[in-house]
Length: 160
View 1 (cartoon, rainbow, N blue to C red):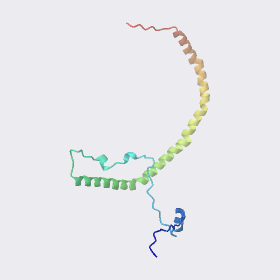
View 2: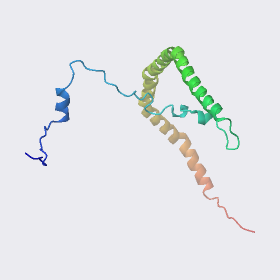
View 3: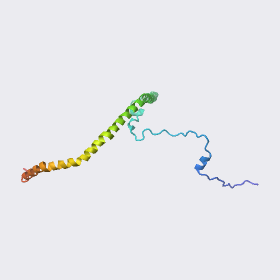
């Protein structure tokens, strides 16, 4: 009849996965994900330019605060809009040209450069044997005889 001071320990234990599966709506909502990183290897890290990186006022010279804020806003807006405009106009043609260029370079490398290098590497042992015999026949005797002639020459350095 009085007030009870004990709390009841009634809980339902469910895993988060089971709980989420049981209340999923029939029509799935589109999941909002963060934008993918378009420069994961930091190829263009040098292009991250802010207003303070381009325009800076020394401590001795300052413009009005409103002018500084407005020029910052105009800089960021112009950079944003002009980049969007130029990419809208030029991105597809440049990507088409870059695709053609890399396809041509890849095909030249695969079908011309690598086979030429492999052919040279295959022919190199026979060229090496011919070169070694030429050196042994002509150059080695010359330098051996020159070495024998100059082996008796000695230098003596005297200090004054």
